[in-house]
Amino acid sequence: MDLGEGRFARASVELKVLPDTRRIRAYLRWSDGGKSPARYLGQVEHETRAANLAEGWKMAWEKGLLAEEPQAEGSWASSPSVRAVMRANRSKDTRPELRLRSLLHKQGLRYRVAARPLSDLRRTADLIFSKPKVAVFVDGCFWHGCPEHLRESHKNAEFWRSKIEGNQTRDAETDRLLQEAGWTVVRVWEHEAPDAAAARVISVVRASSQTGTTPDNQSRT
Image (cartoon, rainbow, N blue to C red; front, top):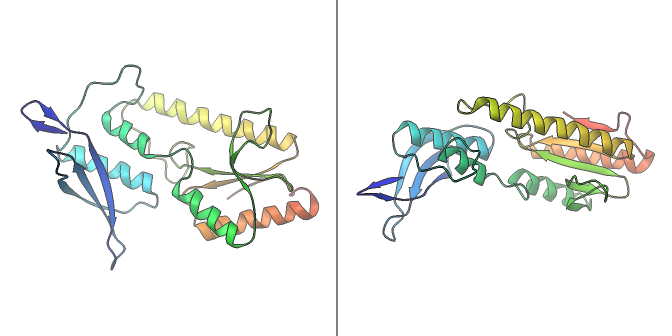
């Protein structure tokens, strides 16, 4: 963010939920001389935090509140806003993962977190149930190409399309390798309702515990 007189500050998008209406508002916040001013950007209405953050950054750019900064050497993000959204997306312990884990734990299921189903395969599942051999992946809508919520980037579109298609190819390969090793794969989109996702995982784990496998050895809504 350009503060004028040659001064720049790193800004962040903050999301606030109104307690009465449950509406979500996006604010731009930055640091300036020990203070943390904020600027209201607008209301966001997406189903995931990542999508709302992306919308907030888009609003900030459209309002002319941000300025380009020199690209970091070797960076493959097309703009500071893209880099900021990428940094905001965790690779583990995301909100959808934590909600799913909490619901499963309340139902008495025990699991390992961020572990490899196969020790000799460098693929990590978000949850694994070792005895029934069920591996659960909670997939982000952007990175894994959700057909409902993926919004293609207008900048560097070819690169991002290739990146996402590569992730999808890797996902399919992971599913195949695990299935060949006798594992059942459950993939959950981050936008799925936690209760529904938990019910599906519970059903697969219990079925696998009883029969050793589910009919198609894979589950995705």
